[in-house]
Length: 115
Length: 113
Image (cartoon, rainbow over all chains, first blue to last red; front, side, top):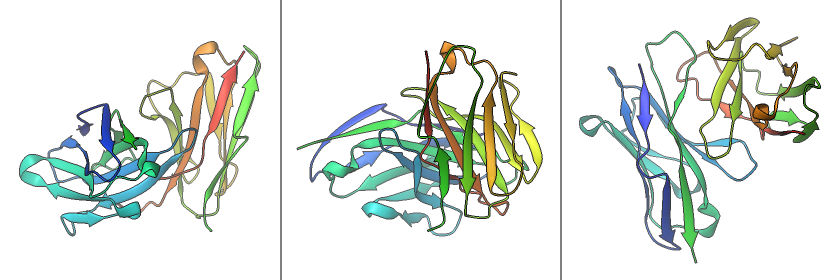
């Protein structure tokens, strides 16, 4: 079965500082991996996805993530935090070999940006 | 722009009074999903449709039903809402072709009084 673990339910960074949100997955095969962002009272917006092509994936709003098979990780980074980045971030995984449509979400990380 | 639309954005219902939430999409995706999300939690899948093929999650209460009359529309019916059903309800869509990334609507915030 697939699962994801997001280390740190709350992360605070200063405006302009590096953002690092951690995601580790558990899978018997290289999965598909996704990062979503959710602003208050909004739906989830897809930031980026990994589909076994390039291991460094660039997304919207200046975010990127690197797939590291040896570490079973897919951490999300942004070089310089902006106030508008304050939101909830979810990592998700799906199994390429699973015939179902199941996404497995992490428990989320709330990002606070300090001015 | 192609999108997922949910109406209403905010819904207040009384304890035990049936309520219907709606979702429509202009993405022409074959798969549609309904999630329940409670405060500070990840979305929890209730059910999904693969075209008209309905797939219920094992732990989805019988109180929750869904209808998909056509490709574009999907409804969530809560037959007898309880206080514990107060949550954000999210609709999402995806293609059938992998990786099946999901595209979400803005959600409906349900309050039960």
